[in-house]
Image (cartoon, rainbow, N blue to C red; front, side, top):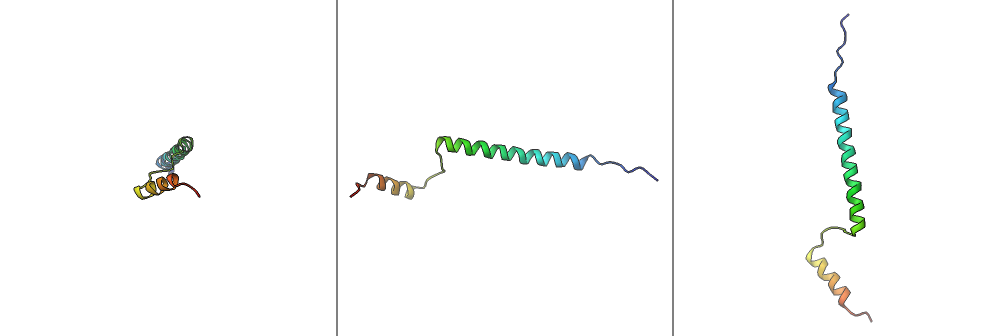
Amino acid sequence: MGEKSKSVLLPVMAVAVFAGLGRMVMQKIKADRAARETHVTGPVDEKTRQWISDVVRTPRQ
């Protein structure tokens, strides 16, 4: 009987995929920490910005 050739491609691809996923997870964690520290929630459109301005400037009764 002939020897079975062991393919190296599949394990290498698996390592590459898991390394890529691990890197993406680490980037997400770092981005979340940075956003939490700087209190950045995301871009605010003009309508929302105006509403916030009106709410803050309007005297409460």
